[in-house]
Length: 137
Ligand SMILES: [Zn+2]
Image (cartoon, rainbow, N blue to C red; front, side):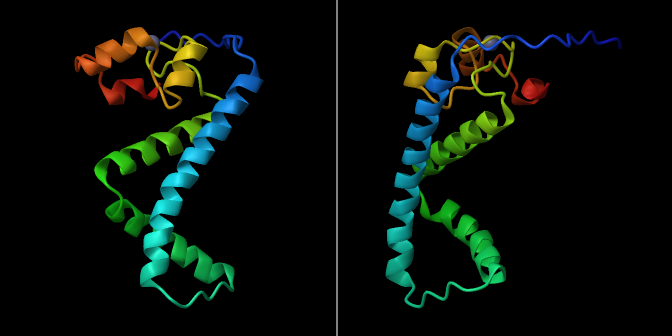
């Protein structure tokens, strides 16, 4: 199987300022979801022993697990999508369709900041014609 990979990187058509604004919004939304959970957490837990990295590290692990149980499906889904979008921003793959690689319209990103697909591929995905596995490349 011969795969032809184009090494050419598509030039970003969207200025980074736009992404910065979206990133801020995502981070803020993420914070809102997390603080909802943290209120629950604080209610059930009195002692705050912020000390060593070790404790923080362990806390983070159980924290994440509890978080995922504590949130509703919708909140959890949104949080995962936000985390995913932020991760893709760090990787530099944000704003490009995970399926066809074309840039996603900035208006679409502003409306749906965690959009992974361009509008065409999103339609395919919603009809079940796009498999998540195929989007890894
Ligand atoms: Zn696409």
